[in-house]
Length: 130
Image 1: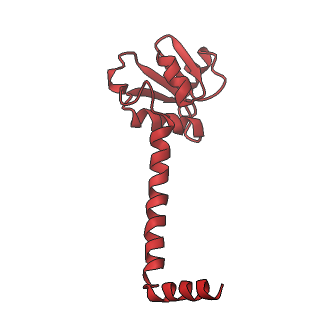
Image 2: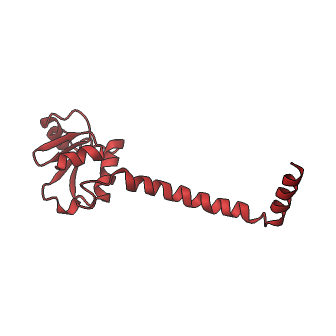
């Protein structure tokens, strides 16, 4: 270990140690910034990828402001360029009556033509479009 240890010490002290923290910060920043974008990109590439503008059937969503699944659906629709009509069931008595007339028992309630979906996942929405 004497020769190996001496070699390693010589190598370490011969390099510029000030670049290591800066390099580590740059690499970590790139990884942290890139991983969420990569995760979003690979999480839902499917049938609807960028094809929202080609769907002729209106998409209607009954939602609330606080619902995390409603937020996820809004983000999905925006990312895939779906035009949709949103009715907040807590903002208007008329919206709530329409929601109840459809036998809605949870939000989001998403309608695509005659087909309906309770809740939201990208995979189930893409299956609804087929």
